[in-house]
Image (cartoon, rainbow, N blue to C red; front, side, top):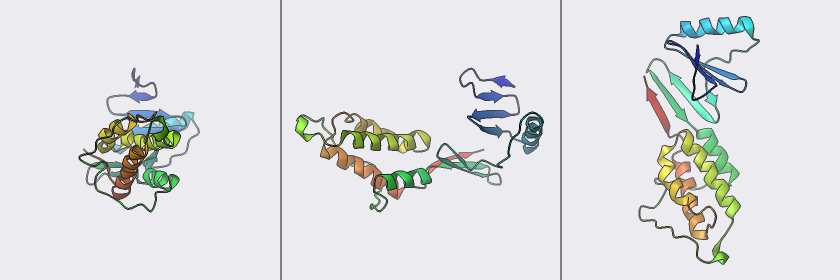
Length: 178
């Protein structure tokens, strides 16, 4: 196996990929026989438990369907968690993350600044979803994060809309067809 120069926890050969994360090990191959053979080799050297096919990693739910040749990634559980954390689990869903004609201006008067840390925390939580499985949030996060240091109530309202969008689109994710 060769070690990746870009990621030192990634190993690969012509027919197998191994990814390490703390005490987790992921094996990828086109043929299950190759995966089983590698597991057998590893079991002769290390004490390990086989948890079966991957279902979750770093807050991403992973649904593999070998028959349809696809892998779906989503963060429904994570989205439910952040909606609950910010007391928005019962908010009404909406179909777009931002109003089409929204124009957010920077804060001019320091007295208009509200809840900087809450705003930043919400942006960070949504950003994690964006980086994982929700690239549809990239533009909105770009616009809203420009106001991280001086958010006003207008910015909070625009951010609230993103959570309403997440409520509406919880199961949205990424599908890989192979």
